[in-house]
Image (cartoon, rainbow, N blue to C red; front, top):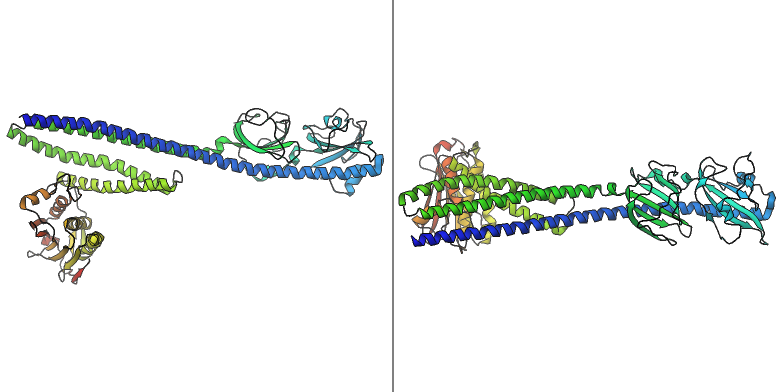
Length: 593
C-alpha cells in the first residue's frame, strides 16, 4: 500500500514538472516565430524602400538631364542672340532673324530683347505686338547693376505676352566697351521642360517637380497636372529637405506633399551649377503595397500557427493531466484485483478512442504545417534566403515523418474500431509487390551489411486484395527484419502456394529471435521487446500489430515462429478465396543485396 502511494505521488510530481516544460517550450517557440516574422517583414519593407529609391533616382537623373539639356540650349541661343545684338545694335530684328535661323522652337520657348529702359524692343512672337514695359520684372532688374553673371532663372509667372504661366530665363548683354545693350529674355512654358512624365507611369500620386534653390516650385508634373502648372510658387522647404542644395548634389527624404498632403518618397538632385533642383516623388503607399501584402500574409500565417500551437499545447497539457489523474486513480484502486481488471479494460478502450482522436487532432495541424512549409518553399509569400529555405525543409521533413507515424496510429485505431475498409483490386501481381518492397528496403539492408533475397515459386497466381495494404504488410515485415538483424546476417522474402489453395508470404531473418512471451509483447500495439530507455532500435511498436490486423482484414492470418538466437520467420497466409484461377506468372528467384 505504501509503495502504491509513493508511486502515485511520483507520477503526480512528474505531471506537474512536464506541464511547465511544455509551457516554456511553447513560449520560446512562439517568441522565436514572431521574432522571425517581424524580422522578415521589416526586411521586406526595407527592400521595397530601396527599390523605390533606386527607381526614383533613375527618374530624377533622367529628368535632370532633360532640364539641363534645355538650359544648355537656352544658354547657347542667348549667346548667339547676344553676338547679333553687339554686331547690329538697335537695328537687330529678332523675329526676322529667328525665321531664318531656326534656333528657338515655337511652342516650346520664345525670346525677347528688352532695352536698357525696360521696354520691349524685339521678340520672336508674331506681330503685331505693342510696346510692353518689363522694367518692373525681377528677371530684368537683377541685371541693372551688372553684378549678376550668366543666366538668371526667375519664378514662374503669368506672361505679359503669353496667356499662360511661363518661366523667364534672362541674361545681360554688354557691348565691347561695356555699354549696357539690354537683356535677353527667353520664356519657357512649364510643359516644355520635360516629356518624361508622358512616357512613364508615375502612378496616380507620383509627381515630378522643378524648383529653384529658393525652394519655390517652378513646375510640378502629376496625373492631375500634366502641363506642370499646379502648385507653381508653393515652397518645398521644411521637413527633411535640405535648406541649401549644393551644385550637383542629390539625396532623398520622406514626408507628406506640400500640395496634397500625400506621403511620398522624394529623390532630388541639383541641375549642375544652375539654380534649379529636380525632385521625383513616389507614392509611399503604392511603393510599399507589395511589402504590406507580404506582411499581412506572414502575420496571418504566424497568427494561425500561434493558434495551432496554443491548441496543441492545451491539448497536450489536458491529456497529461488527465492521464496523470487517471493513473493516480488506478493506483489508488489497485488493491482490489477485480476493480483493477475492470479499470484496465476501460482504460484500454479509452486508449483506442484517445489514439483515434489524437491522431485526427494531430494530423490536421501537421498537414497545415506541411502545407505552409511547401508554400514558403515555393516562395508564394515571398522569396526566402538559403538559410530560411533550409529551416523550412527541416520543418517539412520532420512533419512528414511524424505524419507517417500518426497515420499508422490512426490505421490501427480504425482497425480496432472496425472502421478501416479495404479498396480491393481484382488482379494483383504478388511478384511486382514483392519486388517493389525489396527495392524500398534494399538501401537499408546494404547499409546494415545484410544479404537480402527474394524467392517466388513457379506459376504463382494473381490475387484479389488491397494493393496498398498488402504492400504495407510486406514492407512492415521486411523493415522489422532488416532493422533487427545483425550485420552479415540475411533477410529473405518467399512467396509460395499454400496447401489449402491460398498463397503464403514468408519473411525469414537470422536476427536475435524472440521467446514466446516476447512474441506476445511484439504483437501488442506499442509493444517493444527491447522496451528499456536505452534500447538499440527505434520504433513505435505498431508494425507487427498493424500487419496482423491488415492480414486478418483480408481473411488471412499472420503467424510468428521464432527461437532465441536463431532468427524469426513471419508467415502471412491469404485464403483460397483471394486467389484468381488461371493467372499464374513465371518463377522469379533472385538475390537483391
